[in-house]
Length: 504
Image 1 (cartoon, helix red, strand yellow):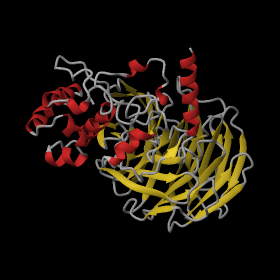
Image 2 (tube, rainbow, N blue to C red):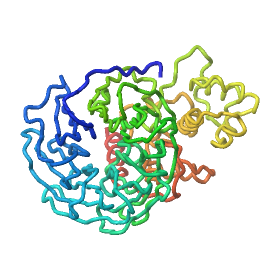
Image 3 (spheres, rainbow, N blue to C red):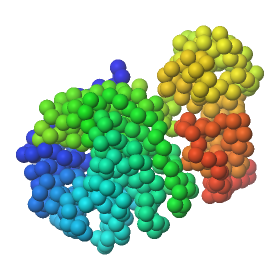
């Protein structure tokens, strides 16, 4: 936290009523307000776009969102209309009327840009085809107003939350009409916002046959919650399981937003603050204060260096985030670098099973967790015992209370347990990283997709599971099942790579 600085970069004061939503695209910031306008700003100097303000709504504009490519902006209003705008010209390219003509509270584009979903005061969601503006289907099931909705990163599912406190999952691709999953205890008193991490699990894997995502929600219970979303693509069976509850806000949470790298989660609240969290560790990092009234929305810029927040005080504040090195770790793909210290280093080219107690202590020190050296020493944890440790052992038997420290030990162990310590990816120079098994760091012979969305060598992940481990080697989340799906496309690419190098 000492390495993170959030400084106020710019304040927009052009709106004459509550700012209800903010949204970024590559080079623009959009804002919408109770003053019935939508405005577009340059992210370079925050001058207003020539076509701005966008006028067309008759009442409060509740939400605005850019399409994934940034060429279209959608806005929705209490007037029951969803308007699509050409970002370059400011022209209306489509006006969609909610079937019941009730107000629309929230809208969201699918990541593949083909669909847009809207949630309204009539307790329903509507799924629309963007190109034709055609209504594909309506989802009914909530007992009260739909206040939040989001597509999964693969565009296959929609999650919605309502003021009845419930979370529901719907099929956006395969024609299932009823909800696929629901949680009646999403948030006490009501769900207000939700968003998926863009990087967690299978989010960045376009060819994955399993769904494994991280969902953040906020509610009237003053809490931010993190959920594991899992399922088999095309199946009507999906699971939504609570992973973490993040207390800290002292009033209703109105907005959540993930950074582009997925390593920071921001939340805005009635308590006038914006809080930043580490979403994997489930810990608070720091709090930003500045608004005079409640924070209604927040959004990260595409490079993750700016955070915009909108408020009931009629302003938009843009914050500059700098020197984030200490928090750019946690989710898979963002492992913290091994710290170079003057402490003894872990033994080189000795398999983990042969490590002695002092070797393990040296390895713990190399992770920057030297405060636990004595605990490992007193418990006589050698290499064999290290491989057998579980999260429960670390917490209850060894007294390692910090979830982040337990996760770091288990994640780091997964990277060394099947290869000599000291052997790095540099030993595999020229081999694409996606061809290497995350467990063994060796070229995969039989790549398979586990239910966490990651691909492993079949022998390595089977050994992992058969040894009694029920958590993902990459995310440390509980594996929903032991099912393994062959990754035939990757196997073919690996065979081509290997054959090409052997001929060379």
